[in-house]
Length: 265
Image 1: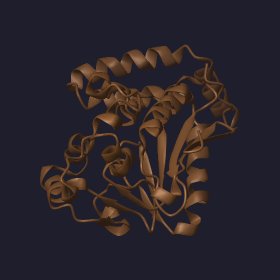
Image 2: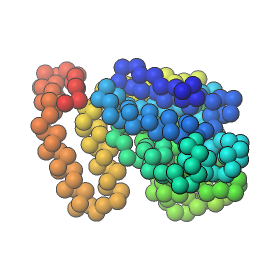
Image 3: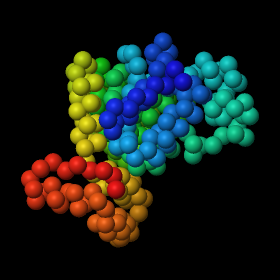
Image 4: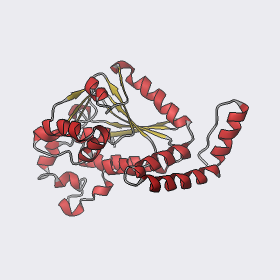
């Protein structure tokens, strides 16, 4: 679909929200398309890193409120264009939930403003490289709640007091404030963002993909389990990795003082 572009280069899949005339506001079709693209990439052994970005000067202005109004409220987006209203609402298939459960690392190239749903999408990525023109804007001043992960993510990322300041006051956060809060990994000159993102993605993709996936999975599960339970999970992951060709290759590369060539098996 033209509103959502995908491009695979090497082991890096770039997904671009492509409605620059609407500041990449998310339509119902884009919700479905983005979820499908993420899940398809996670199943594809050739994809070792996903980059999520927006076309033009903005990352994502949130849900397309004009479309919501035209379809009689939020149900039009909730059923992703199926026309069945809230009976078709499947929250587990929406992009923020898919982002939460896939094991392929997702790098956000935050090229501009991310408001509402766009803010939640960006925060749901594993790492964020931000343009110096980037901003995040909570939707509370539009009379709605950050329904797609923001209320869960922010208290864990910045603590309760900072999260309530961000979410309840709804003040726009510029790039320097985002970095100060630890919400982005790095702020980069706008014209250098694409190149820096490409370098980070290539570095991610060069690592052992099974180990990367296991590490991300273990971190995700660790947020919701005890230390002891997570330690047992990590040990199970480690024992499985010991039996892989990638582990043998890593040992051989270390002994031979060369870069490892991982195959994902």
